[in-house]
Length: 199
Image (cartoon, rainbow, N blue to C red):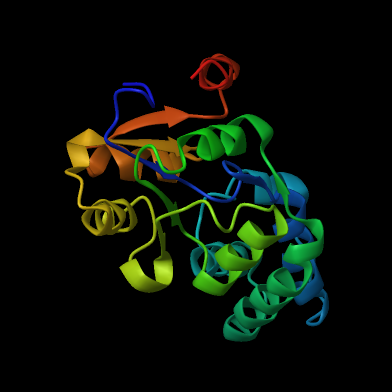
């Protein structure tokens, strides 16, 4: 399925619409530093599709650290929101597709991040006025790979899941789209980005 065939598109935010890996990694480490801890970049890269709570829980469990998880979650979230409007940048081919489709087909954001984080990133990347619907883990309650985020987005767009095309950049997101019965494109693949640029 292409953007031209789909009746609606749902875009992941982090890594798909916006290039935010550095933003999140730096925010996590700023929050961890307040408790004397540090996160390795390779460890983070292997898990960056996780929602904030699951990522921090995995970090604490693996490192057997005496850390205040709720405080790390809250601090990293606040730091991300504070920095997002200055440091978030769009992912050019995907953002350009969203701009081309605005007003032509229903488009949504479906993200594992919290609502305030997603809104700040979209503003920072200059994408905040494009989307008909924004659904986050706060509203859907279950993070990807659970399909709840994408199913709620489809419901709010009033489009059957099978007619939706999802753009994603994580294993959790791809699995969530498949579980939702949606078509999915993995924007980590260079041939997918090349195709997107022609639509």
